[in-house]
Length: 494
Image 1 (cartoon, one colour):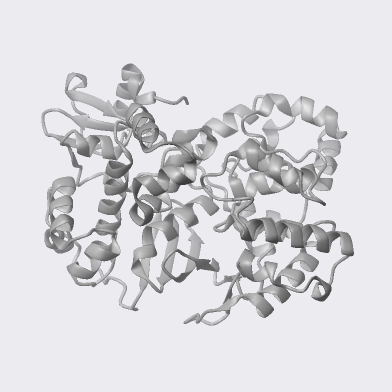
Image 2 (cartoon, one colour):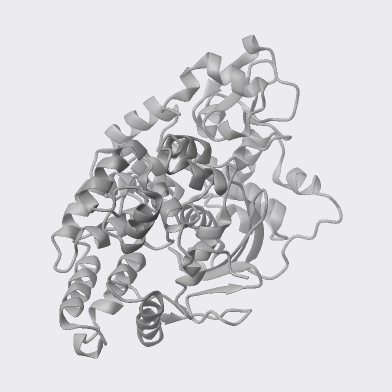
């Protein structure tokens, strides 16, 4: 798949006529006769090709005066895979918009984080997505509003401000314009037997994804490496605490055949879109597994692994700085030892939270809290203490910033310059925290063992040369190679 697919009219028409769900989120179909826009897999009879026009984003459809289809709900499509596989300005901007930066800091705040002028960002987003940052953020607000209307019993005034609208009037006008229904009409359309969440601050929703999705290594990895107090596996769900812009939250994520069941408990409902965005990123739900697996299958030694269990995702994180700290704690020790080190830091320096279900007790400590820790209290070799203290000091001072807007090559270079940071630590952070889909770990013991078993080259240099054919999806190849081992990270907990 390539950037700008909406300009390939013939291909878009074929996708709509075959109702191909794989293209949901890649582009949107606007119907000139009805003034409605749909996802490619919309179940209604496809319009005549001459009545179709195509847009790269829901925001562009809305700006052009089209309303969201009530049948296929295009606002609930998985996100475009583009923003998770690219590191250019537009992709970094889209990741920040999804993280709520425009709502909290405005377009100037977005520009400051990216190091570009507001005019440059406006121009590039408009050229590629047909909408500027304000329109894209508005489309996200509309989606959040609909979610709150349909899944909570909250009064409309509370929903308006929780979704990020500056006034109830703007909220009403936007919802009516985007969905062709007022907020109260949206709620009235719900089935009578449907009971919205009644626990204050708790929401139940579905996170869509592109099939196939193999949950084994995804949830297996998160559960096997879970830090006590911050994360747990309970009753078929991965649960963890979230540090969010306006407060904190607890996410409970359960794999289902056609979606991820998500339950969020938030101290401030304004954090809803950010919490959803971070959970989606952690579970890599916007990936295009068909494109990834097709590429990896071209290697005859990888093909059997892909065919056996297609749709593997890269388990990522909801907090990039947290993951970097945990990567250092995990250097040259077992998974169990790394969890023990992290749990001690959490108990001593994490912020306590209340979990209605028990089990979760803290938020992971901030870099600022960890930078104040006396290094002599850390039960680790002196060289690793130096690595740890240097990292948290740099993170606390914002000298190294790990976030959705990170420039991958620049961040890699900054990490490699730190004491104790070699290629393995840097690339595991690039893969799981920064989200680089092409990060590769040729020196990893598990990867080298798998390579040897499969008949792939097992020396780092030779394996890297062979892996050139897997680009730009080498992080996914890592998941398939790791899965040849019997380590708990590869299995859904029983």
